[in-house]
Image 1 (cartoon, rainbow, N blue to C red):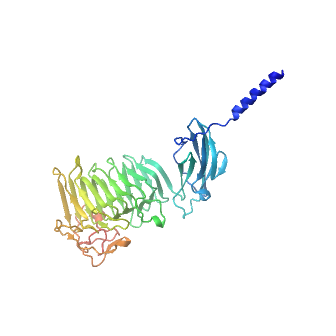
Image 2: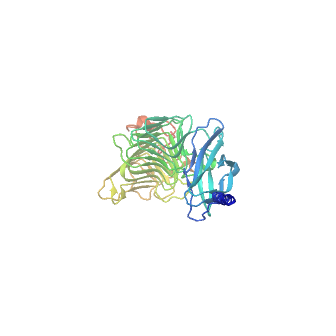
Image 3: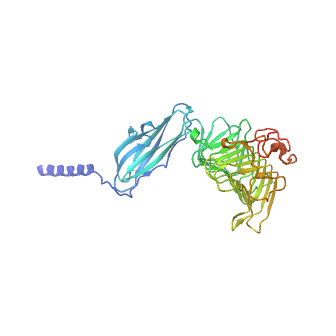
Length: 461
């Protein structure tokens, strides 16, 4: 009997020892952990002191255990976010073992006051994971002010955005084919870093002089006021049609407006009027074999081009100011460049009408028409413009060459004309133009245009 009890005790001891034995830990540099999501987003609309929780699962896909040396919030105790790691509320923990093919839970909470106007629209942090000599991180994103938060959204039906709250775009928003997004006067559309608005249907963004529409970065601090490259821009795809932007400010992106096809009907692909496009890292308007009708617009401070149209197309440009002054970086390319050519397999006819524009800047040639393909037709009417060019090619038809337009204060973004400007009272009479009564009879400041008008987007008469 004693032998049986002794044997049973030995078996039980071995059993419990086996159960309590620590699992081997891998220190392999190629070992990794996986996460249930690639970022933690808080897109709940906060109405008072905001508080919400999200779960992140951390998986160990390896057959052996991994020792996570440290898990912490990058922002530490000052972060708007807080963590609960396997039941422990903390902003940091150390030496947490995750067995092979097992997981742990990390709960993330955010506590912010969305009515605090001093907060940025996007509140960010990250969770840092250190193990086996390397680091992985998971971004944390919430918004700090009340806004309509759109994360990779698609607009599939006719929709109107109003000016009650800003629209904050995270990653992207797409206007689907045959859908119309109407944006009311005074609306603010703010884009987080590298985000885009893609238009495959119709965009109708019609503001007023008193209530313009804003397309800009979500970084509204003074430090970022004129910073380029903070978001991607607006992109109009081949299936888009009948879009209009009036009285808008588009600023601080990479390529302000990109359009890559001709109109599908007898209406302009894009009608751009009374708008300001500025502070773009690369280009204000980028066109690929496309159509642009543009009146009373101001383009300035773009890294390479203010307007770049290649592969042919149709351009109707009247009473615009293209000011090639660069506040942030040197520029080596013409302010306005139009060409019939993209590549050896991509070229098409180019038609362009330019009346009463100012195209000026620091370079010897700020206006270039480039014909490269002998098989295409290039039809250009350049009349009553003030141009900065190194040749006399355009020295007829009322054009003024290489005379400083005498802007009021270009360093401060003021491109109104001084009283001594050679561009005063030099405009071609556009009163018979199809768009005269709707757009061309007034300037960007909604001031009546009297002919002979001043050149550019501002009228002094």
